[in-house]
Figure 1 (cartoon, rainbow, N blue to C red):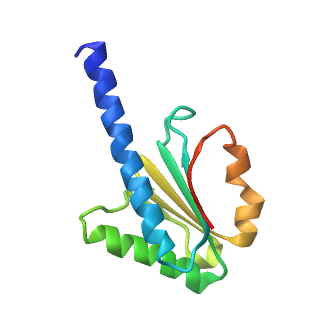
Figure 2 (cartoon, rainbow, N blue to C red):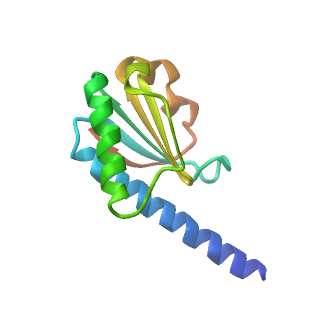
Length: 128
């Protein structure tokens, strides 16, 4: 494969990841989530192309946010490769391969402060 073909394939993959991340942010906007951010991390790491970060106020909201995402995306045959954490823990990670969704309670979000740790990453979308 030529270098141009490799770059073209990579750009297409990033566009698809971006589309998924933005779709996830739209779905999250319909839940009780607060302060949703989509961050483009693809030039900073190989673990993913985008982070989607949001907060809920309590276990019930964290459960509703994560369930809404898995249900809505599941209807489109998009399933997380892995889900880590429980609402009771205050942090749920949904791994959609190139898009990592972090659903935090407010206390743990402040503690881990991913936005500052990844401050070099451009914020693509911010929904208050």
